[in-house]
Image (cartoon, rainbow, N blue to C red):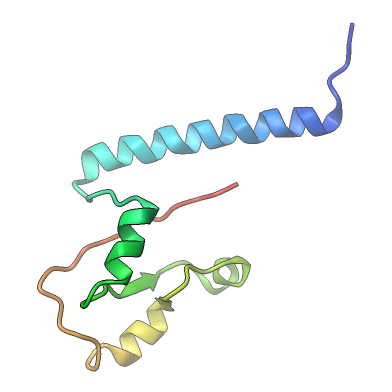
Length: 99
């Protein structure tokens, strides 16, 4: 019996995990009413005359790993709330996971 190299097995595990996460995200999106945006759509919104304020609500440990460009932390949002542009519509972005 041929053994699968360890790296290939790990790659398969990550692919399976990503597939499960994508399915969960799709199911959430269908039932949440939260509009979906592609990276290109978000980039266009950020380049517009009135870009959205992106608030990263993850905890500090997660933010140390990575953070979206242009995003502010929840603490920063709460401190700067009065100076931020008044939005006509509040939108939530669903948290995303990547492997």
